[in-house]
Structures are given as C-alpha cells and as structure tokens.
Length: 107
Image (cartoon, rainbow, N blue to C red; front, side, top):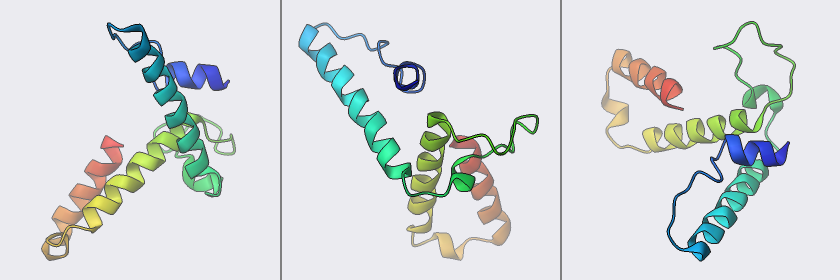
C-alpha cells in the first residue's frame, strides 16, 4: 500500500532527471515527503482527515487515504497563510466566504 501511495499520490518514478544520482535523490525526497505527511497526520482525528463531501456514495467511516491526508495538509497550510494576512480581516464577509470556498477547491 505504501509503494502504491508513493507512486500514485506523489508521482514517484515520473521525474525526468538526466543524472542517475539526481534520480536517486528525487526518489529519496519523495520517500521523506510521504513519511512527513504520515507523521503530520498521526495525531489528527480521522473524521477531519477524510472529506467525503465530493463523493457521497463513498463510505464515510472508511479510513482516510494518504491522498486525503495530503489534501488536508494542503488545506490547512492554505488556511494558515490566508489567516495570517493582515488585510484578510478587512475583507467583506462575502469575499471571505468566496476565498474559503476557493481554498477548499484548490486543496
């Protein structure tokens, strides 16, 4: 399962580098990225990690996949960046809601 996640979610093996050691380094970096995402999601509640709103036919109690964990990490990073902007507090509520919907779609 881990090898599948590394290949499908992170795209390992798709990098096109000319030097053999650059390929080795890229593979190593992808492995570390996979590990860091899993470590970040370790203590998070599973209900927050799995978002089945886009697929209502899916079982809501199914464990979150690695792609779900990556998506939640991206969403949280975008939310943190958005909330740290000094001008975000001065925006109209309608624009703030639009930006939050946009961030959900991007992540």
